[in-house]
Length: 286
Image 1 (tube, rainbow, N blue to C red):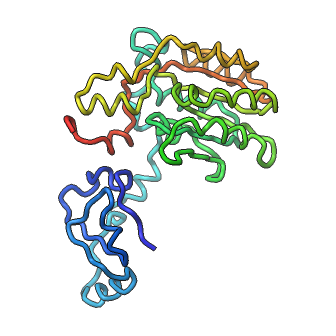
Image 2 (tube, helix red, strand yellow):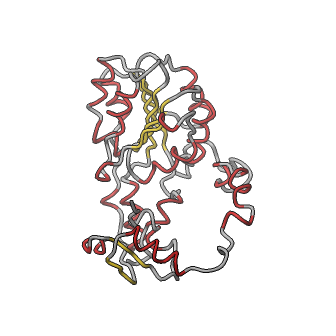
């Protein structure tokens, strides 16, 4: 088996900007992928590897793990990516346009009960909960990005709420993702799904905004405002609240019954660009 070099796995080829990329495959059609190799070798990967090993002599060169990388990774914490030593920005969602989504997800990780299941919707924002809201075991994390489409997370989280022993099912999605799947709240209410729906609301399709900005194109078409998703959620019979501070977010999580669905909308600062998305965006002007 081999691995594909997509825009995601190769960081838009910024992972190895100066390297000569050699790709081997038994099927020539594999060479037409999004990350074009400099040299192609039509061969069985196993046979090619064996032939290369026969030509290699001497001890292996020092690797990345020989310089203390394991220790540095063990010491690293998700909050290390936050700027400054703490939440220096105003906690209220006011002039800055909303809360820092990284700090929102750090707060969720601190206040959610242990044993939770976490579902992330697709979109620019999912890197924040994926990095800052830990789970106890990999099988309790559900990432929905089939075909790169938003709006799948809510349905998956509702299903996850009924899997195995009772435990909190949390889904973090964007306002665009909720808008495309909000009818699923009817199912959640009717079935009394114990699911906590956290909406990171930047009043826009965040992925498109960042793409448009990077390309130097006006982003007005990617923005929307005026739709009160909290009120719409209540219209489905769902308990729903909008919070403006991290303290209010913590109170909403603590006050949730854990029995019926709850929608918590958090206005966020859409100018915060997720690190993973910055890595795959094309260079400015492209």
